[in-house]
Image 1: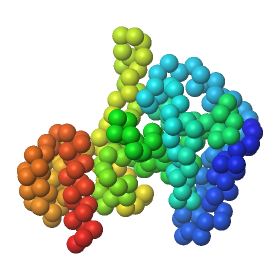
Image 2: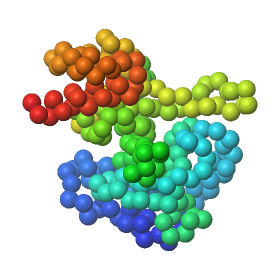
Image 3: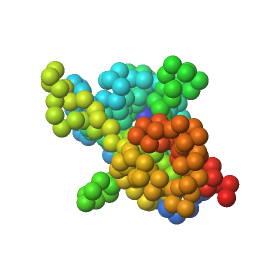
Image 4: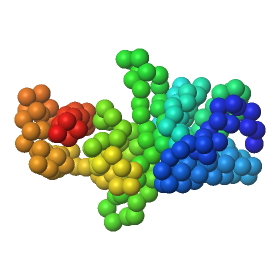
Length: 244
């Protein structure tokens, strides 16, 4: 594995010098180990071979898209191209110096990533963050989820979790399907859970401020079944929660 990129060299050493709390320091150390293991000889070759065999499962197609990495030192680091395979839970990023070289970022190696470039209304920036997720009786696991609320850190967060469909389409490919998730955005230790897009389920999230959010939703003609409208309700709630 070549570490030719100055960007990657910075990423590898980021956590060690960052004066963070004990948990943040542990997270950064674990992230470096996860990155190094994913890009070590046999593991990297296996990832590369497996990705090369995938006909579907990539978010937005298998072509690399401009984007940025969100690292555990709190920085945003632009990279020439990214592609994420939802089935393998694996992000692949082009090297910032040698575009023919790529690096792998498993979900526990980053705070998240951005797809696209800001300022383009035709192709808005998509924000993905590593968060704990819990479905039904299954245990919690860390996943890259697409954030729909205006801010990444709550108080409430709404997101999509993408996974390949269990059934193949007529062309033999398994399209990605999204599961709507909601939960606290201010802590990474509380998992996001599936959210039914209905009035009762959505309003339950807002506790004592449910009436205030209902009034806002009515005035804005928002629909409790549309994720984009639910995100607006959460943004309103988050503003109220911060102010009061």
